[in-house]
Length: 179
Image (tube, rainbow, N blue to C red):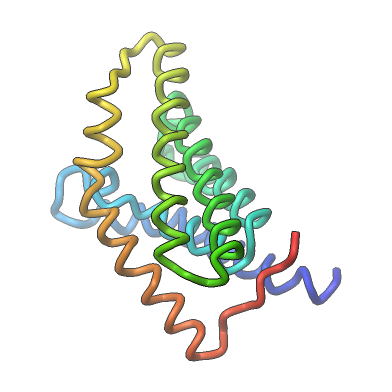
C-alpha cells in the first residue's frame, strides 16, 4: 500500500470506529432520545470528509451506519439505517468537497454539508419510510432534521471546528488527498 493512502485510511478507520462507539456511549446519558438529539454518528463522518477528502468521507458515511446496525442493531437497517446511509454519505462527500473548495474555511464547509445531508435525509426518508408502509411528512422531516437535532447541530458546529484547530496546531492534520 502506498504511504499516500495509509494516513487517510487510518484516519477513516478511526472515524468509522468513532461513529460506531460514540452513539453507544450517548445511550448512557440520562437524556431520552440522546442519539436523535445529539447526532453523535454525524461528527466522525463530517470530520472524516474534512480530514481525508470526499472519497474517504463518502466511504465512512456509507459504512458507519451499516456497521453500527450490524454490530449493535442501531440504527435499524430499514428504513432508518438506509436513510442514514444516504444522509451520512452526503455529509462525507460535501464536507470533503467544501473544505477543499473553501480552502479550509470550516463554517463555510459545515453549513452547506449539514444542510445538504439533511436535505438528502428528507428525500431518502420519504422514499424508504413510504416503502416500509410508514408515513413520512414534511412536518416530521422538519422536526427530526432541525428541531429535535438542534442540540446536535450546535454540538457539531462547536466541536468539529475545535477538533480541526487542535489537530492543526498539533500538526496531526493530514493534507487532503486530491481526488
